Length: 506
Length: 115
Image 1 (cartoon, helix red, strand yellow):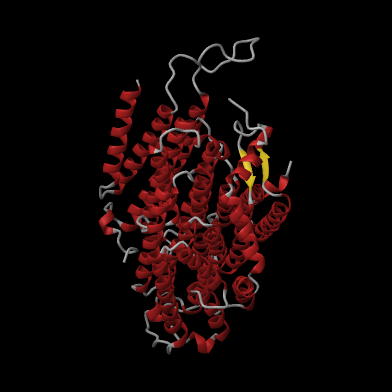
Image 2: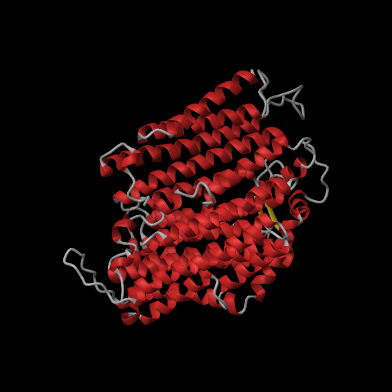
């Protein structure tokens, strides 16, 4: 029995319960937030080290054997994602100590954050497709409540779109699960993979594949159903934005990776071709949307969409190198994107605005913040030697090797346009002279020393991660390579879950 | 029984999508309710309908006699109903708050975050 598989789910659930119990004690909640996310990170690292040592770890819940009970499965991709959840959770918890106001904390910011992390970790670790749906819902309900904390007009408008499209995607997912169960009579993903090979006729399987693609595509904010993301991500408190930007869409991407390597790998000419062009158009539409924006967080939101395209491109090309690129890209993107949102929150705290037109001159007053913005921004655009360069390099090289020149060209072009957007932010926020202050602008409260450190610490930490991946990427590459190997050989996953003897018949 | 259920499910999906495409946020939520019910019925039907054969093992036997209904889809539907209930009650509260703040029940008037 390997307990480390269940710990990343239990720890945030427990922290959530504890902080609910201390509903009125603000200090205890803050302490539990840091301690809980910190131990989530530690348990994630433990899980990753033991997965890379022993191979795929499986825990049968309640000791019900594989196809009958719910299995928790940690393969390398799942473990890597859990570590990323820990890193982002910890960074955002530290950051929210300084930026989340008393009003938000009084309405349960911290318990909801823990619940969200539990949902995300559960989605990464479950080996049961209906259980995946349940974890998605846990995550979604927590995210709904976090999104409208504060109850401003823009938040309400954004939340209606967010809630509607995410519920639509959940229902499509649920319908697909129902039809899949009708087809193969099992919910365990390993068992589904095994039995789907024996199903005759590809028609129904292809329909199901496309249904899953649409459902997870909405969650991952892929073209054409990404509009909920830029309509809502810039509205909540900035720590929430950063948490969402780092983790939520990546759960959708993870689910796509899981489902389209393990279950629907019979007909890649059809399914992965759709994914390929979906990825191309996602990249292009996201980046073009960003060029038209002049609001800090909105530009970043559109860039989430375009970056999702690269990850799906890695999956769609479906060669070992491309999957490595996809996994590497996810790791790089989660860190960089969260960091950019954290910087945008810092800028807002200093100047009281997210509008690029109202900002300026920060290079003169806060040169270090400017440098800390430039590291993730250039990394996002793919400037060497930062992490984004290697991520893009691997994906694009895989594209050239499989002779998918059209999509590869889009990927290169989008890199250039990303650089344009990032330089736009740099020039407007940091470089140009500060605009003349008008009378109607709100006064910004001075920042205390402690608050300053609580904001600087996660930003510096994530920037160091980016630099580390860029300058010493070999261990991450090796990890991504090993996980790609596992993903492309589903028999290992199936054997780990079902046991060697596969003669069980219900 | 199955063809009838298929038609019912189809009508439910169609009605749900139609309601969701309308401008009023109240109708949007009605659409979401219909949608989740359609999905529940779909799970129930696609797993196969068996009449009058509860999945019970008679006393003293190791397995049930003859063909019985599959209990798993019912468990799934039950879970899905609970989740949908929670989420929908959130949605109802959300549209009420949105109506109070935006002072409109029209999606076309909620465009501030789009441009």
